[in-house]
Image (tube, one colour):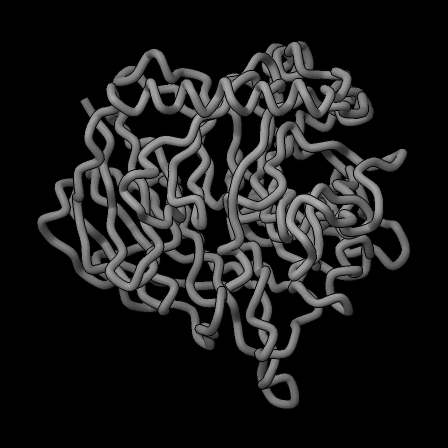
Length: 430
């Protein structure tokens, strides 16, 4: 599978535009629609904004420092204990009020698992027409406690109907969880257009919820013919979208009312973003994104911005010579297109789920960004100064497990999902 390409490079300062910051202060409530002037100013005031790109030599040195730190750190790491095994390619994870977990399996099952992993049951009432194939299936899950109800959001690939039966696309459904079943299920988003079911790659599918606003990442569907649509406002390919929790479109979305533009679009120019999370210290929305052969990225997602794919990239076409190839699009930078906070070359780590740490169990990790890596079989820890990534280290690589997602548990532990036929939930705790 394409997301299994791999490997590693260094941190750099971002050369980001100020337009997103100005937009936040203009009254639309922050990159996530969160509100709160202090959080917004904190998000704009870090040391990474406007930094210049480092030289290749400096980047190589930074990478060596990060690798050395990882080696030294590995000896002191807490054990990653198996909480539960026997899951079929688990993809998404969230927490219920009693401490139990909801975990999706890509094969099309939603599991409820006790906090200690000793019991597991299946949740019924899933959306119809879940298409399972390649990277498609049941993907992310978010739990929202609202009033006296527990609401569940699911992202998944949905097969078409009638003449469109042999097509599939990302969809999002919302339902109430009652005992062991989903009730009052409604599909609140469908990607347009769907693509042929033979194209089973780059669906995206990660979600993040902030107040009443739901953000959803969508991939470019891999092929040359499809990926160019990541730049088109008339398609959901290669986008991050923003909707209200009931599926309606917020009036302050950046392309509302623009002829030919899909109003759900929040940002464009993404390849295959499979990580999406908010920085709890600033309210900023961050993403991880699969590059092709090299060029995996970590981005801060700004309102209305263009992240370049496939016009600019730090990665190369598959099959070209590693380390001696022309990047996709022929350029790494173009005016009006955003730069990543950090990226990996000449090959990829295949980053998936990401999570900021703000717990008390590991005070030395507060403010760090954790990145689950598939091909690299590791959990990356990124240390930040503002938006700038100042160090990176790959942890738990010795486990040899493809890591799909990472979440902070209510008690401050980290839970990691491994992407395997016999997938596991790992708990990292003191």
